Length: 300
Image (cartoon, rainbow, N blue to C red; front, side):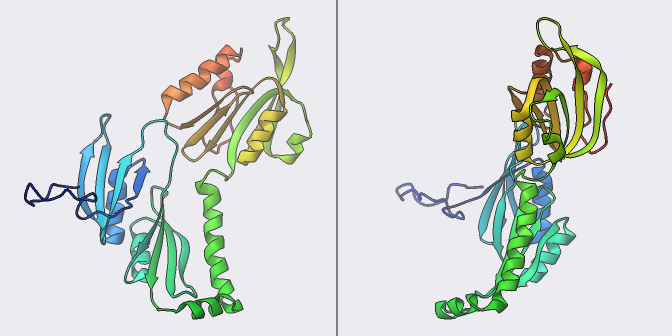
């Protein structure tokens, strides 16, 4: 962490403190202490300091990796996961890649030589952040870079590097699959169900009041495996009172026809608000108790 230097009082104050650069990344995660440990083991980081948060955990921490400072702190309850994407230049990319895997990372992209003179790999650390591990192994002049880029031999490695990231990104940014339970009296477009990956469907024998006159309808329950876009389509296609509950890793999404509640699975405050909203729509409390993992749920 930055400390005042011992320069004379009349010396001008430096706009960028010693040891820092113009750009410094913030990494916000669920377990900053674990992240610090990972960077020490994988990249030889030096911890500069940590400050406790008001609610416990770590409110601020800094490590130095090579000549650069990386700042970190613990996410608050209810915040979404926000993985960071960092490029790290090292002298030996292959060795750093292997150390990262031994420290608990998973491989995203194996170390690959690219036409512009760098050897590149990627790992995803235990908190979900993705690190580009890069080593410059050859000086290539611009004319040669242009020539190599047009060579079909360069296309294969580059395509692999691009595609290996694309697969992980669908997961990281929330475009991956959601598991969930959809409860509706019906759908405006029943054919929509045929387009979804329905893993289980139940039509209940029990009806619930759907309007002020007390009319009842049978509730349709669908256990589904869907994308984020399909969740939007489900919300647009439903009619009458309904409810949907989706989960993806540590993230939960509770969706009504008129509201959404996006939360971390341990966010009790937002979860209570989501349940209260459902109760206000006339749903029974036991209808809101669905699993938050990949097991098939049953009604209470």
